[in-house]
Structures are given as C-alpha cells and as structure tokens.
Image (tube, one colour):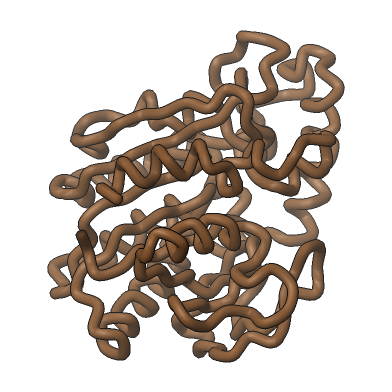
Length: 298
C-alpha cells in the first residue's frame, strides 16, 4: 500500500482540500464530485486527501453552487489550488505543488492518484512536473478522463457537429449547452480537451507513465447511434473510447487496464439532468469503487 490516495476532480469542479479527519462542515464534505468516493476510502481505513480546485485562480473555501459546501476548516494557498477551468499544464503545476506540500506537511512519500474527468489529465501533467521528485506516484486511476478528446472540446474544435447527434434528444441538449458553458467558464480548458490538442499533448507525455500502472474507466450511457466512434457511446462529456484510452499508443500508456460502465454517466450533474439516480455517476457508484479498489490493491 502507498501512504495515501489523492483524489483529483476535473474541469469546472469546485473541491475543498480535505484530509482523513477534516472536510467541509456543511454541504457535501468533499464537493459534488469526490464526496462519495472519499467516504468510501475512509470507510475502508484508507488515508485519503482531496486536491483543492476552483473555477478560476485563488483559494477555495466554499462552493455556493449546486450541491456545494461551506465551512472548510483548512484553506490552502492559491498556488497549490487547481484552476479547474484553466490550462492542463498549469493545473499540473498546482497539483504537483499540492503533492509536495503533502510530502512536507503530512509525511507522505508515495501516493495513488484517482482523477475524475480532466482530473486525470491534471494528474498526468503533475506526474511530468514532479519528474524524479522523491514523492513517488505508484498508480493512476482515471474515471471518465478525456484521454483522446471530449464532446466539449471536439464540438468547439469542429471535429463533431450537430449532425453527429443523430437526432438524439439528450445529445442535442448537451450540444446546445456546450458553447455557452465554455464561453462563460473556460480559461483555456475547453480547447485543451479536443482530440486535436490532446493527440499532440499525448505525444509530449511519452515516457511519463513508463513505471506507473494505469486503470482507465469509461462510461457510455448515451448510445443512440454507433457513428462516429469519436462520440458514440458517450457519458455526456466523454466517449467510452476516449475514457478507456483505447487509442492511446503504448509509448504514452504502456501499462493499462480498461473498464467499461455502459449504463453510467459522467457525473451527478448528468444524473440529475437526465433523471437518473446519483449512483449511476462514475464517482458515486459502489460498483465503480470496487474496480478502483482492485486497481489500487485495496
């Protein structure tokens, strides 16, 4: 076992810093992405931390949005807080700083990283940033991470079009909300989750994961069509193919196990929007947690 598990939330997520004893005292203890997974690890006696993240630069002490939180006992500085709508590599610098802080303040010498959505990309960027640092990253698990593009990025980039929705009402609704959401919130993140950007970025990541086993978990609840495979099936934001890292070359991803949850969605936002129970979201389902446990040797 490693010293700790670190949970890394994704794009546009707001997540407080939590440690095994301290979390937000009101609302969802670790935010609307990582609360259930954090509770699962604590129930199993695992030392778990969540990396702080917010929309924009700065500190995170509360989330006044949907299913948010407040009364955070420990607020970490901005330089170790992920800007969840900013550029991937900048997020990697902040996350690497957070991990070094854990090493210095908590005596952590080795960690497993579990990243949701862009949190998997942030984790990969942080691993590269750490380099030969004395803090060891033992394993990486990704949940719905856009390894090879996303609905958001590929639509903005023109690699997907409205015609690719094939008149599926849910996918048409998602497409309609993508552009205004990106215009309102993205500070670079939206354009860095396109297939075009990520294929070049992945090439630059060659060698980073050479000694780190990866488990890539994808979902594909929305399955009204089969083409293009770049989109179908998808979890609302990421295709099953991209979430499983199916097309990532061995030079980038030498050791990987892939898992599929065909009846799951990306997050509880999508579960709520489409009338599904929260445990159909990748970060809220005990069946997904069981796969994560096996990947981490829990």
